[in-house]
Amino acid sequence: MSDTKVVAKTPMHLLKQDHRNVKELFAQYAKLEDGDKTQKDSLWRQINEALTVHAEIEEQLFYPAVRDLKTDEAEDVVNEAVEEHHVVKTLLEEMSGMEAGDDQFDAKMKVLRENVEHHAEEEEKVMFSQAKKLSREVLDSLVIEMESLKDELEGQDIE
Image 1 (cartoon, rainbow, N blue to C red):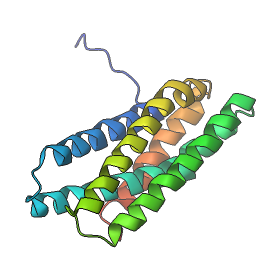
Image 2: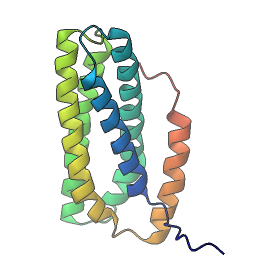
Image 3: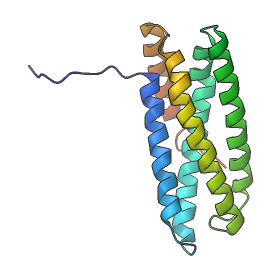
């Protein structure tokens, strides 16, 4: 028998993994030179898909579960997160009509990165502590639903 301990996957684990992945994509984008429009476009498409899928999973499944805790703090943190998603979605929509690598596009990418990184940090500190109050059954169910929805959404045409 192996001595390795198996840690149960949680919704917070899945979302934190998404946060790390998109932060890495932003970092790769930031390292590119002005003329690297092909690579910038490729990374932009990956960032757009990752954020769109992630936001959908949170809004359809994770946020309602946290809201169901029926505490003032849970309600406040979910309401704020929904508004932060609105800002991100607005930027994504504006950027979809632009050319990756243009000056204005790169400026919006920087603002997008700052917004997303702030949102992820706050979510991990505040919302995840609220989510830990959910029952094991709810958390386990959320993992299954979140993985299923992610599989369904990934690869769909985002633009």
